[in-house]
Image 1 (cartoon, helix red, strand yellow):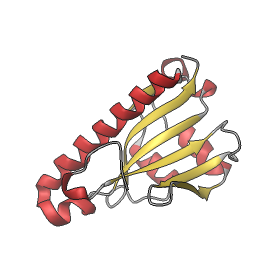
Image 2: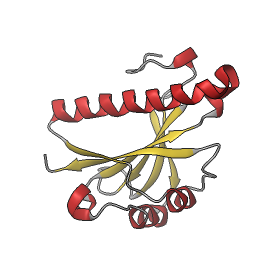
Image 3: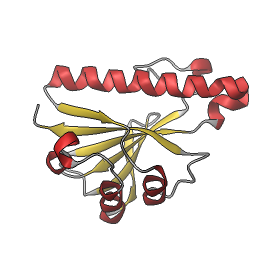
Image 4: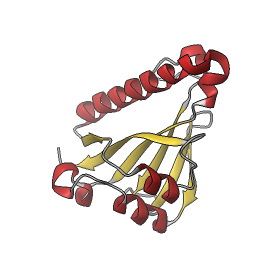
Length: 149
């Protein structure tokens, strides 16, 4: 299975979650991307999406969530990397998150889709909305997608 970014040891410690706001034909809700099947799996209904939007620290004027089609969340699963590389594996996690964010930015530019990178969110509230513990699974980056370019 080919991926657009390299991963230290082929461990892929970053998962992609999507909060669909206005994405046809998806229902409003949260999804996880399954790269093995090239499929989205629904995780939750609209309530987690509203909780996610409430957990953003940046004002709408800065990241334009009211105009967005979706929020793309880069979710770290550090154990995938640290079980092989120890604490050094955390470096791989963050390097990979940056590489994925860059690939998404390039794809947005090529497709004429607006995107805004953000780390302005309240960790505990975001993790609660997604039923994550913030340690074994943690949102490390957020991209607002589908805003007017």
